[in-house]
Length: 130
Image (cartoon, rainbow, N blue to C red):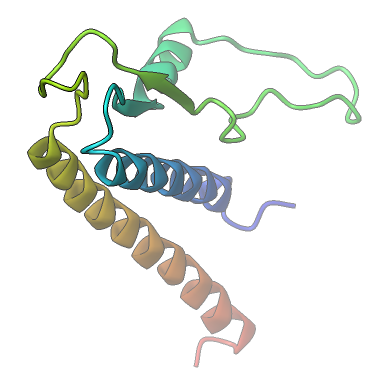
């Protein structure tokens, strides 16, 4: 039984994506001075767009079959080897990383606020609307 029609699952997957992205950005920032380090990037939106454009519809013929739903495993981390910003072979652009970190924190906080709203709605229903 789904109380929120899959919203909680979507929010959970989005939080997982934001968490992985935050770890990747932090890793890039911590290695900004490491020789020959190449910046890593989390790719989720590209995979999501591909999945949505294909409009793949799977039919489950038995309830014990595993559903074709997004479970957050579509998050890929890639390494950008095409650029070099420093003379030591490192390609971490610290300004870009800090901007991405700020954007990701705002995104994460928005997801947490939305998740809290969903649980507050459930709590209100459990208490009978009071």
